[in-house]
Length: 115
Image: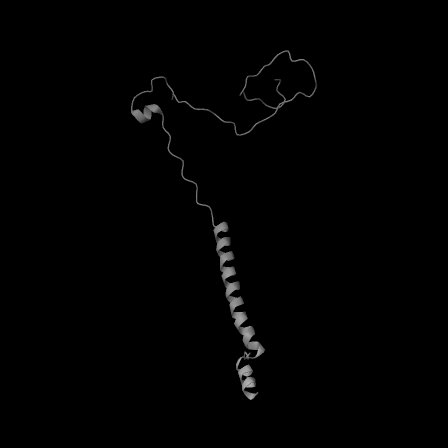
């Protein structure tokens, strides 16, 4: 029976003092906290970095300056389209019948002007 008792004792796991296990876990936790702090710091640095300065505007010149001869029509001929930055809705304050339209599409108007 003594042999069985010795065999059972050999299977026992020796545990160290309670503080030894906590120190090992504390070191792993410290590494995790440090890595997390580095990731957060890098993310903050990325988002808070100053914006790069805007490029300088390109110099402009007329067709006569570019070619050294006068422009044929006095202006630049180009094709394309224009898109409005803002959109405004115009509505009447009272109901009634429209008898005259005094503006054209795209024309600039001021507040109080009769349309």
